[in-house]
Length: 245
Image 1: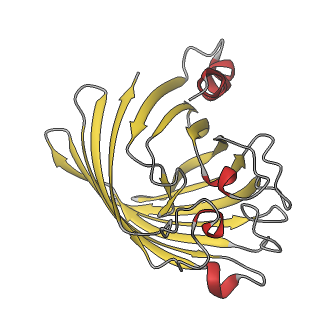
Image 2: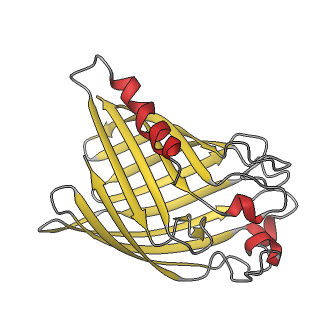
Image 3: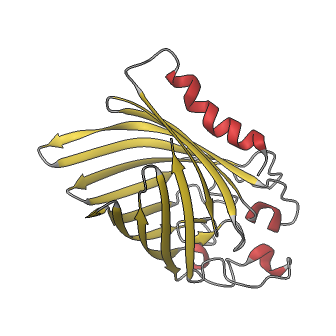
């Protein structure tokens, strides 16, 4: 992973937090056996290095996430080997026990050279109750991740964060990615995941079981041009190791 990726991810929120001692800034670095997002492999089944930063001040939050990635280069003409995400929003409580979260997320793939481009912006809203959270994300850019005429795409997800005690956390998840436009029937899919993690004073190993019903004909590296014909949404076990500081 290029050092500039780490610098951009970690520096983004560090600048925001400067001069605000009452605010919180949490940084993290991680290594994963495979980078998955919404069930799909972003690193073509290869390991990835990641970094993140989260700044909070009351209900306001801002953050950045960076990861090495492969899928852009798998498309002919594509030329981005990492992803940088910027996000922000506001979280609070509607009524006793019911929380809300609204915000934006910007996916950036520097100099990706794709047409249409891969950079994507989403707005999202979520409701939470107890350990459960329901979230809806809506594309507001012209296209979603370089898929032509997909600007009305959305993602709905339901998940939970269950504290098992002694530092163990279990996170079940189910989601549905709808892709608008001419590729809707081929590109839309559902995903499920189950993640178990253990916090050792900031060092967090994890294991995730992930599966989707994504169509092989649409979600394969470079439409098979890379020589790798595996479905990017195939079921997988993903191992991770994160350090929060």
